[in-house]
Length: 80
Image 1 (cartoon, rainbow, N blue to C red):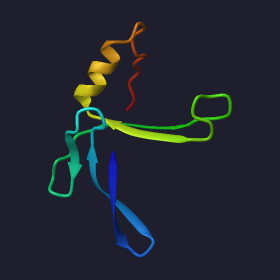
Image 2: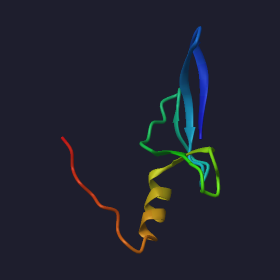
Image 3: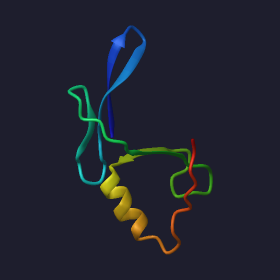
Image 4: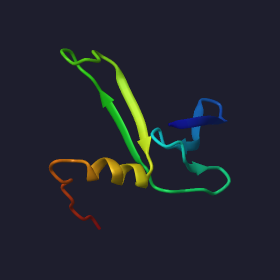
């Protein structure tokens, strides 16, 4: 879950990021800064959530718990 503050007129900045699953603060203005998984899904017609946009954030611990439960492992590639 991201929260925003207005930095300048018409401009928003992220003020904190909290894991939607466990509630741990992953980023805030005081210096806590951990990478998170950010998901944004636009659901189309014939889905259970017609024309809704769902967004959430997971901390690394919750991401690992989720992906460890997959029947097929996450495909991993490296970038530079």
